[in-house]
Image (cartoon, rainbow, N blue to C red; front, side, top):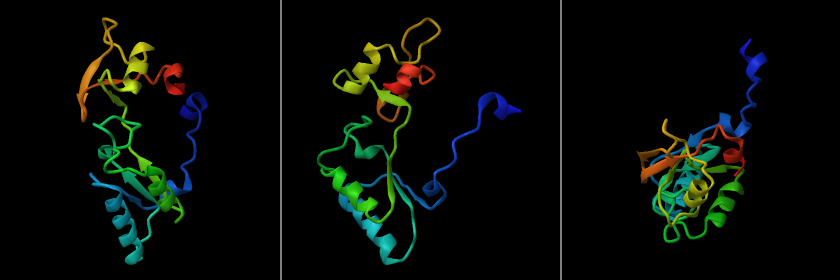
Length: 143
C-alpha cells in the first residue's frame, strides 16, 4: 500500500551491490593509487572507492584540495579504467563561509532550512558552523 502512494524506489545500481572501499581519510592521490594497486596486487575485488571529506578545501564540498589532489580527473580516470567507480562524499551540510561560492549562492537564494522564526538555521558539523539545504524544495534539488 505504501508504494501505491509514494511510488517505488529506483533500483540499486549494479555497482552498488559490490564491495565498497571506504575509510577516513586518504591523504592524497598517491594514497588512493596505493590502495587501489594493493587491491589488485592481492587479487581482492572491489567496485567502488569512496573519498571522505578530507579531499576538499577546508571541508567545502564540491572542491578539490590542490596540494593533495591536484589531478582529480586523472585519478578518477585511472579508477574508471578498471571498471571501478569513485564516490566523493557529500553530506547535506554546507560550510558557512562568505568566501565559498556554494554557500553564498544557497544563502542568497534562501535555499537553507529555516528555524521556526523563519531564520536560516545554523548548525555544527565537520567543517564547523554549517547550514543545511532545504532539499524538500525542488529549486534547491535542481540548483
